[in-house]
Length: 412
Image (cartoon, rainbow, N blue to C red; front, side):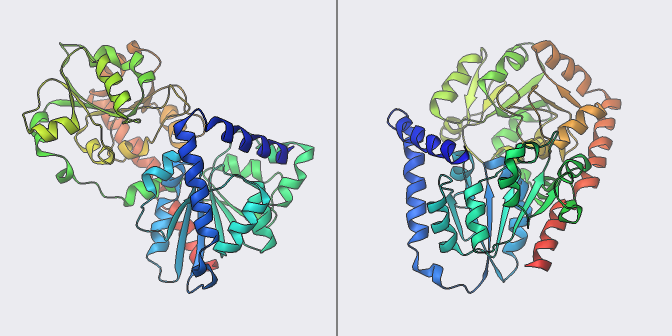
């Protein structure tokens, strides 16, 4: 069944490429990466130990970022980084702290065998939910050890649930699992020996704690525009978020300045977002070229890489994605102790469960919810509660990435 599904999936991608330029480009780049890796003559020589990290997309990369960076500073490792999704590959394809970034090919055993034999990894690190069974089979043939990090389950995963999944479990026999919480450890321990499971917390927290932000990287014109005014930063926003936030965004009497940072910065999407703004909305890249004074109350950021620092000038934050598949990174603004809001789709995130349970993160469904959030967000008692609650969470998870790094360094 699994092999048939993979065959069907590869066939669908080939057909879809005729109609979708993004899928066509994805197919071309995956093929190019595979050919380059499997024909690399340097793969015969191994001066350093090779650690292969695989991430589905950008979110999973952030789970592994601190561990990857730690290994970079060790002279004895060479890090390979693969992605399945373009959202991770396109943004991190030139990441300076790894030897090579590439797309993972479709999980067909012949291709995976070639890839593993070419890379010759000393360790494979899977991040969160990425289970490619033919890849694991190929790794097992060469007796490559595997670890999985940042695992979080609310219920038993399929490879532990069904009788026919014994083949999957056998491929994981010698793996080590690092979980975010005790519940995940308990679920895994039903089929995995407890000594193979380590409850360490969320390694994204370690990444965020050790990543420096700098207000100097923010354009001085933006700082002059803010000049003590109240600022809402909308991080990784989608058009689907606008039903909840556009009422305040377009309120001419509102006291807020709005910095809208879209998930999709394509020209088409920027035009769409701007069309929702009834007041004057400034496009960042156009403004930087013109060098005029920022006017109006809305700034739309259409370049990558500014969001992490822009949170420094925020008073409150809305994190997008919660009206799509899942909420994006809430830890980046949380590190500053800021009141957080987000849409209703946020399954699988330890920190969001915590924020909601503690009443320091607000789930948004409608514009009324968002307006109530803004009223609450500036109450001194609430802001004090938010800072204390977030600090407690960060203290609990801050060493998760460090524990994983130390394990790799001591064992491999």
